[in-house]
Length: 88
Figure 1 (cartoon, rainbow, N blue to C red):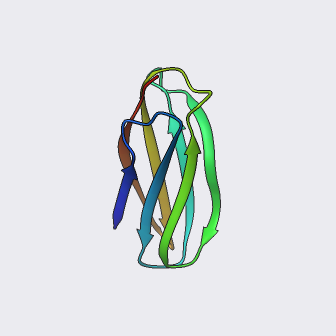
Figure 2 (cartoon, rainbow, N blue to C red):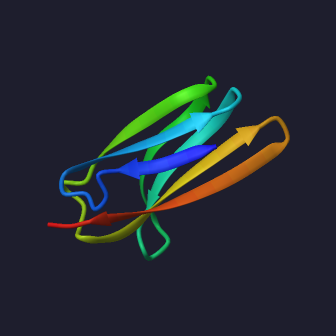
Figure 3 (cartoon, rainbow, N blue to C red):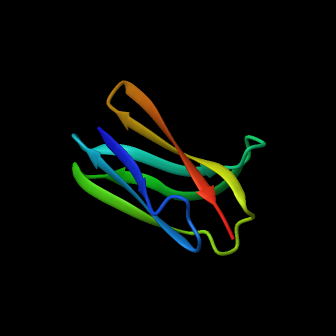
């Protein structure tokens, strides 16, 4: 599993990339430092292979956020976290 954020720290946009080894149900959320879900970028079943999501950070407050990728495959669920720094 590969999960990374390009253009970090982010000024206006950042690209979140990940690779799925199997067809899976995927949720990609952006979480603020209060533990609240700020955005849900993806919430659907996806094929195996390379995927990406573009996050527009232009309306987000400056600070640290987490991107949380949850992958559900058959009876397995895994979560991955990445830090995103938003600056102005």
